Image 1 (cartoon, helix red, strand yellow):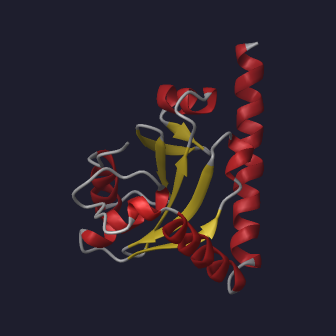
Image 2 (cartoon, one colour; image 1 turned 30 degrees about the horizontal axis):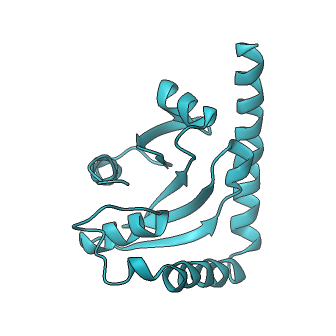
Image 3 (tube, one colour; image 1 turned 60 degrees about the vertical axis):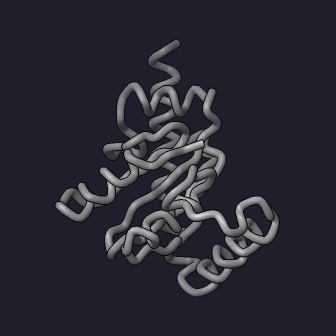
Amino acid sequence: MNKTVIVFMLSCMLVLTACGKTNEKNNADTGTNQIENNTAKDSAGNSSKEGKSPDSSTVESITDIVEYYKNKGMAAEITTDKYAEIIGAKEGVGVKINGQSVEIYEFNPTSDALKAVKETNVLLERKAITNDNFVLIAYADNEEIAEIQNMFKSLNTK
């Protein structure tokens, strides 16, 4: 049964990778506006986050993580939505941080998918960095990515 679960998860990851790339192409112009609208809804919908600085307090969402990088002086923006549900995540986005492409996912803390990522340090056939229920994967392996990953590890999560 364990092999069956692994094969299923790998299949889902492969599908997600293909869907993510298609999503980036199809939403080059309209996708960014949709993401900005979702971000605005999150900020407006949760009044307890107003005035909160992710640099000095606990991050509770992917949007907080992006703001954390901005507060640290990096250029950071959400570029695409990802089909997170396919891999068992609650939410997922493509992000550019100082020109480097990464993906950030939020999982249910008790999910089997998150447990698998923590055990293997792999998501979507890429090295994955975990911090509580958040996962970061990168497309490159360079000094800039190493700094982004180290900052991600140091985040104070909920």
